[in-house]
Length: 360
Ligand SMILES: Nc1ncnc2c1ncn2[C@@H]1O[C@H](COP(=O)(O)OP(=O)(O)OP(=O)(O)O)[C@@H](O)[C@H]1O
Ligand SMILES: [Mg+2]
Image (tube, rainbow, N blue to C red; front, side, top):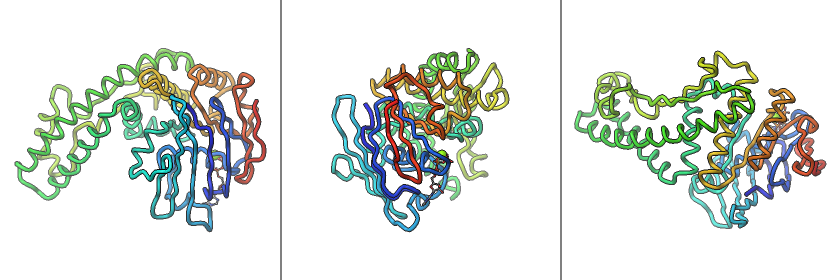
């Protein structure tokens, strides 16, 4: 399973580019500002309809143009080719899958699963509970078809409850939203906890390999007080929630506590160790996904080579090799990404154009 063709038009510095990626490691090399990260963004747009960088969609459009397009061919595990395409303007988007217009991004996200590790991932892992929750939910979304509808039901009920809290609605109104939240919220917790249990041994495996430690752990914090059911916690928090105007307990407040040698990763880990922790967590997810769904996902690694020493880089590349995942790695110097001969395709870019592509 891999992306076999990528074409982008009017994306940032790129006027037009066509790449034929290899099934394993793809290195995108070029000087600063040449369009390397932009090519990873193109793949992300194709997979999820949005960029992984912060900023408005309008900034993605090449200066002076009003429509960007990205097209690709995805070869499935059954060997079928799926043609996917996305077109974006400043105000809207159009998604095509095998020539048919798709109405939701969800349809796209199921075609080509993608993971990103970039320079800001380390900070997000150590500072953003939303990012940490999102990691678990990525795993569930791609393996359990029931998870997304469940999560959507919870989100809808949460919005309704929050609106009811702000309009000082009566208790009867809140009771019905509490019942829906309690039912869907407990189910989300149980699925997340189950995922965390399966994830943990894989994390240990990759942490040993990349960080040389058994001390990287993740623990799910559920988002409401221990000893209470969610129904009880919502009931107990109601008057406080009315004052604050939003719901203060539930799986939207869950977190993943990440520790290194029994201390928070944020305090204990060096910059490189924090970056390696992200890599270990993500590789563990790709591994789990491969085992659970029997499918591969695409890994985008932006500027990761700069954070890791030569030995760690080798170990990362070896781990990617044994997972068999298709990966795209950006680097200013392709020679920093050394792998076994024949496994790597290198694309050199300059000023948003492909200058050379070669097998290394
Ligand atoms: N909307 C836009 N229109 C035209 N050019 C843009 C637009 N947005 C960004 N750029 C330019 O695109 C270029 C490519 O940016 P990109 O981040 O892909 O470079 P990079 O090769 O990853 O660089 P680095 O090695 O510094 O990370 C930059 O020079 C940037 O100024
Ligand atoms: Mg870049």
